[in-house]
Amino acid sequence: MLNPASSRCDYGHLLRPPPPDETGGVAYELDAAIATTYSIDLNALLVLPVSLVLGNTLEGELAGEKIALLDAISQLGGKLKVFYQNGNIHVPLEFNRLFGLLEPMLAPIVPTVQDSERSAAFSSFHPKLWLLRYVRKDWRRSTTPDPERRYRLLVMSRNLTFDRSWDLTASLDGQPSGESARSDDALALFVESLEPYASGFEPLKSMIRDLRRMQWQPPQPFRDPRMLPGGGAHIAEPDDRFGTPLNFGDAKDDLLVVSPFLDASEKKALDWLGSDVKGRRMLLSRSDSLDALGQQALSDWDCYTLNDRIVDGEEHREEEHARSQNLHAKLIVSRSGQTAHWHLGSANATIAALGGSLADTPRNTEFMLRLSGADAKVGIDVLLRQWTGDEGNHFVVPHTFTPLDVREQESDRQKLRMLAHRLIASDWKLEARGDQTSRYRLVLATNFALSNVPDGLHVNVGLLSRLGVWKPLLSGVEWNDLALTQLSALVPLQICGQDSDVKASLVIQARLVLPAGVNREDAVVRELVDTPEKFLNYVRMLLDPSPDKRRVLHADRHANEVSDLFGFDGSDALFEQLMRAAARNPEHLERVGQLVKRLDKLKMVVPKVFFDLWLHFAPLARNRR
Image 1: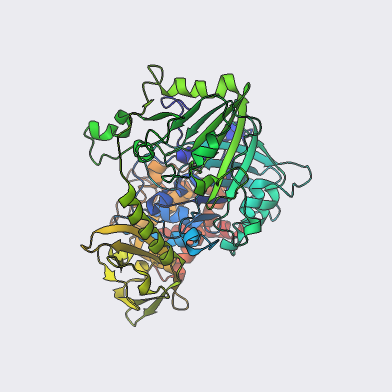
Image 2: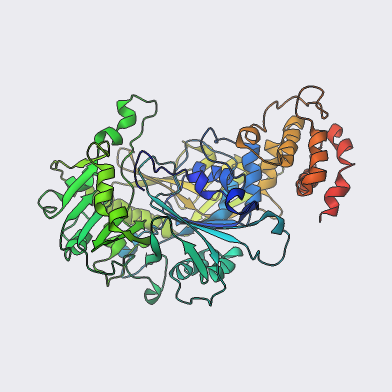
């Protein structure tokens, strides 16, 4: 269940289409997907197509400017939308020309002003879920929906990053039923609330229609899955927002709260969560969160934390680039008689996430999933046995309190949060102006008022393609001598103190205006497929009947040598691949034809040795259209 030694999830495996052995031998592929997250690592988003399109897992070396990633991103065009809180993209360590191709997938959200600007600044768009739709591969050309389409819902505590913290995910598969549509379906209403941020994303409306008739299969041994959206930081009208993302149903006999972050103020969500619990109250959190509240404030709770040997395990083992592996999972388990209810998802045990009571509307946008089951199988005692003592390998241990004064830190945090909100809520525009040498000047304009920067702080602005080169944020900032592939709508910002120490970093998604007729994706193709051998390896990858990442991610090798097309030099025989595709996978020929047509449009020369061979197969590709 949640045994750290045996219940680990592979993110990539969860995103892959259902395998044929689960679908009666029928092959499925991704048709559409949406994701919600608080923060994004661009390199994490960059490799997800390996699972979504190629159906492979995500371990191994996937980074870089690989042709396979370029192709997978191209295949995802119009199929994926990622909703996230504007500003919360991690500044990457290195620039990648493929980053620009991810921008159409991104839907930035700024928390709306509710009672006041301060309320908006301390609200977050915080849900973490995936909704994926798969269709049969032989249905891809149909103009009608696949009647056998399948869905997968992932409700998570994990952001779209490479963070190594301990997180929690629930995976549910489902299919639309023939029953009448439910107008009050909670998941459909939540997805519908995202529509204003996804203009032009065609699959969204049909996904909402399907959700109103969806039958979800809960993971065993649970039953009765309930979708619980909470709050509505992204919803302008107060009456349209959701309530608390909790539904305990019956009385709470015992309660376990797993939350890495807690309220550090006098009024706490823990107070009302535990107020009507008849029996035990147990709390698992991070050490610093518990210490910030103190032992007296938590005297009614049995407090636990992750073992330091787990949190700092990489450092203890003296691993290179060691990173902390702290708690990030969010879970609330209540016992009512012989039944246990799990609430898992994005919400911390804070007033911002849960509200001030079950009748309150939280400031944040959150999403939780409630699962119910027999207490003897999924209850609090079962979890504690898996986590504590010898049986749990002391994964979780009772917390020993250490005094911690966070008042000064909290004051600085509030000042930074207000400034960050004003930055992301401002309008940002980047205009590219080309010259006769196909180089570009990029001009930044914003309505952000510099008077909003508090004394003792200043803001720097940079470019993803020139990381490490920062300029003071002034009324007008510009960069010169840029290639088209160096242009990006993603603008990194730094908030710095008096000694130029970086207090916070964020990335704003601006409105990028390019000259008419300019296409960045074509420019990336021109730069990455820049040798005959890279072109031929790209073709081999497109013809592969069962793409494996170990092969496709090396499609850039032998960059300066043109291999023999018939395999006499010991390389893969491209002629044989073309023949096999013509007989078994003619749609692969069509993709090769699209590549040839694209390169011709870009006035890129297709190797003559291939072009002469392709003339015999091109009619088969055209007949597929």
